[in-house]
Image 1 (cartoon, one colour):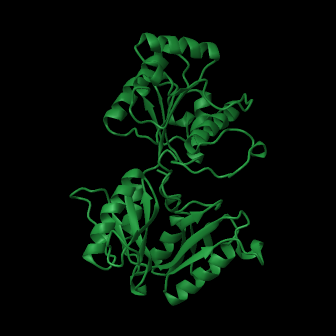
Image 2 (cartoon, rainbow, N blue to C red):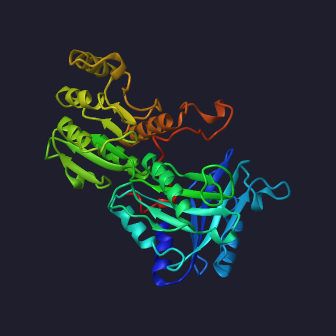
Image 3 (tube, rainbow, N blue to C red):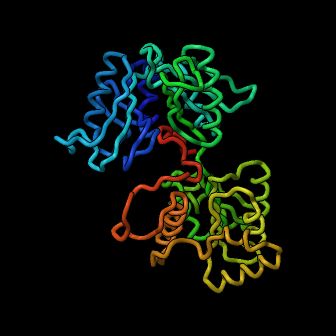
Amino acid sequence: MLDGLLPVWRSGDTAGLATVVRTFRSAPRLPGAAMVVAPDGTVSGSVSGGCVEGAVYELATEVIQTGRPRLQRYGVSDDDAFSVGLTCGGTLDVFVEAVSQNSFPELADLVGDIEAHRPVATATVIAHSDPGWVGRRLVLRPDHEDAPVSGSLGSPRADAAVTDDARGLLAAGRTEVLTYGPDGQRRGEGMEVFVASYAPRPRMLVFGAIDFAAAVAQQASFLGYRVTVCDARAVFATPARFPTADEVVVEWPHRYLAAQAEAGAVDSRTAICVLTHDPKFDVPLLEVALRLPEVGYIGAMGSRRTHEDRLERLRQAGLTDVELSRLSSPIGLDLGGRTPEETAVSIAAEIIARQWGGTGRPLSETGGRIHHGGDPMKDHTSELSDPLSRY
């Protein structure tokens, strides 16, 4: 989405930016999903997958002309659901603003942070009892001395309160609306602030430079992961064999993972896929992985016989049943696939199901909500950062 916004900003023109800030029930897009309307009328991004894009387009065009931001709710339209309502039955709150170098001078720095893998967040006033506050924003980084806050919401008190809370959301990779009193009071109403967190993409560490790893790397990249392929065999671990991976590392897997964990580069959003099915690589690697305090997913490839042998070796290495219970093996959901590409889909399906609490069953056999809630391995960051946050 920022790909469509930044060129307009750099040219000195004004674009309309529509951002989903809040959802209810079965809304099709998450908070942070955004659509850009350029001065020439071209559109990039989406706020609803098509349901209300026309209405949002018209509102964005109006906001470009007036310069006055708007917070608009879109839900089911009893009269004409297919033209301006959400046919899924959900509700979206969409904040539409005019973005230019004057209204958003920090945009280039924000994009620079995203491209450099630095976490950053924006906090924008989307509703206020004083209309003059609406559209004001802060751009903030983690709480370090060399991480200043840019912009202002309207008063030092409001800035301090929102900065404190927004940095907490950024640390957790969360995007949501916060409510305050008109001057940033912790209690009361009168001001709503949308905090969009741009955390680095979650990582997928793929161990084993085999053909299945190439397919998994491609699937993971498609899903928005920052992918590393690691293998101790230099002849196999080459960038040419894994063109969709962000990096290819030649190192013993257990040493690489231990070093990454020590450097703080493995967290609760990280997925680890062990595809070597060779004990001399697998066992030392899984000893490290299963003892890490926070990892989103750990899966290992192999037959059921390989799996039982692997468990026995890990028990002999001192791992407990609780630690072993974190291992998904054999890796993937039962889709009946055979090819590397089909296997990669089954692995991705298991990761997604665990991330959102899905059952893996056909939707035609289930009831209730289609879209699961939950904590998406701490969310894949705000969709507003797509695709520039894919680093």
